[in-house]
Length: 541
Image 1 (cartoon, rainbow, N blue to C red):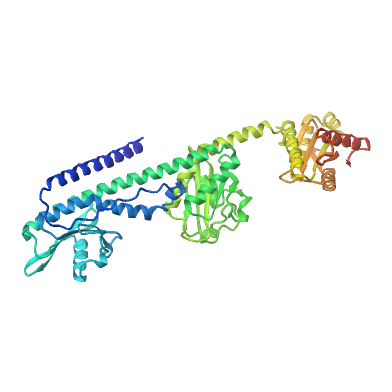
Image 2 (image 1 turned 135 degrees about the vertical axis):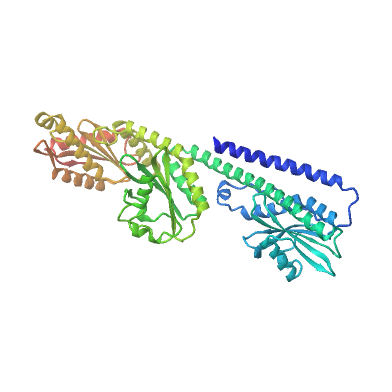
């Protein structure tokens, strides 16, 4: 709340400054009744600021265009005051110099009462005159250049309202000033102080505008992320935005379990190194340590990271070159994940870009946590609690979807139905707890033996099934036989006894137009019963 009030106060201050400045300029213009013959300054109307996308704003890609616009606007704001100063003292020209690089050697003209745009600092006057301006700004002393005993140049250092050096105010005379030298020495600091105040107010207004653009850009990205309710889409979008707003080559989204102190890579951008894409995240790694501590970690030069272990695991070798940042995503005191941003070139990631990435990760926490929780709730509703396999509801939906995909794109889809042999005898002999252990270990063998695109489900009781997309008859039978042999060789240890397990399997293949979709399950089930009738522990297709 304090930060919000401070920001509101800054906005009010900027608005008040602009309003007061407008009244001052209008009053000055009305007060000039008979102007002296001073060259009229060239008035230029700055074009409207372009509408930029949020990524351009956050990365500061509009800085050059905006700086040029600000320079023109500053000249417009200061000209009435500088013209008034020139008339008061009979100056032929008044020039405002500003330090643009941190030392007197980088003074440039930002406003003047001459015609056209201000000249460059290097093109103004003579070398001794430019040296006198630099000396006055550096030493913070009023200086004069005389001709025939009369000052022809009068120079006074200028400071911003906060006190830091800003530059110099220079008055030039063709012959001599109408104000005596001693009086001019008294007047110059007053004029310089007023210029400093005007420039400070102008800078404050621009800073408020910059913060407003930054805030609007972040709000647009936050709205975009909020629209992506599906976790995969949201994760991928977040990685893409992380690359864009930081300028990194790649980004990864880590999902972190604070209770287990372990995590995994949830998503990654296109140019992420392959060694890091499918990875667990351990506490001994650089990224894991940042998640445990909840503190961002940033290296402009990441070559030494290999000495600290791995980036995601102790044995992944880290990133041996480039820039790297790990930005934890915090929910209160707990870390739910992190954005990892990297580049193969040292120095690419800088403080501004890392700030953008940190703000992005903070904005995404709510949307990401909600998407993950909804996905987890959906997963639990479709998962068999005992085995961890998909349940019958999910199996039916996926079978219908895969058969529709086969109809659309062609190819074949295989279905394998498995039944544990003599499972009732296991329950009767060793108890239902032993039967549960047998089911769990059989499920683990099936789950570990198939591809990530395959669906492994428990249909009910001791009956399990596999949906194998884009799989021909020969491949399905070969996989089923390999799994049957693996289960036959397995023993289940429970309560000091060893239980042998075998399964019977029925295989059926679906081809577009071969029969009705409902016939696939029926044929696989008939083949399963044929396997049992032929003595069990076999595959029938």
